[in-house]
Length: 232
Image 1 (spheres, rainbow, N blue to C red):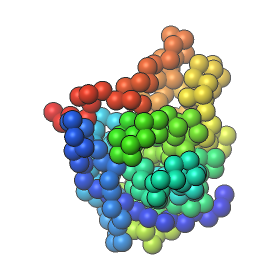
Image 2: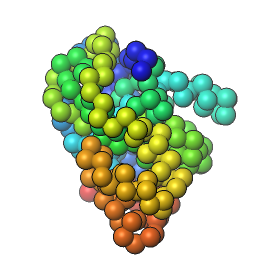
Image 3: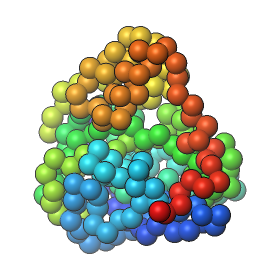
Image 4: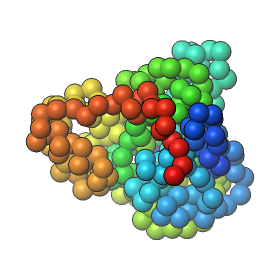
């Protein structure tokens, strides 16, 4: 695997986009070290804690390589990190190279890839592109999440080093294709279910598909609902 160059670290505050929609996509760059907790990076806030945070979605990593693609397809927007709401932007690591369960040392913290990101309608609300979540999902340009195995201080200047790879055949790109492009293919679902490093949410969904032969409805996530994102 090529060396991974951290290009930016970002956190933000959850903001009201109107109509009760709370989003955490608008983040700002950090140039100092920050404590990475099991729940997330520093004081980073999340629009919907049900889906955007927690021990298995503590940090969102998005490859900076993807922004060239988005600039070509939507040239009216000056695409650059953190347009997809990522906490970590890098060069040298994409979905084709990263694998489920990969462990990385970043500064004083130890991370493990837990699942791909599932794009949601907050992207379309933020950028005014209705099909952006579907486009990201179809092309596999989604990024991924980490769980924090060891909290610690991290900064943009710290090296980002792969220290263990337990599932070399289970790339993030493969997981996305299996989950979204071939959602009822038995062998792929079985591999997802049997991967202990994959988040419990993704494994539970894969297991339910195997048992029922049905795919869950994605329209709420991709298109949103009028009251989705409201704080209780």
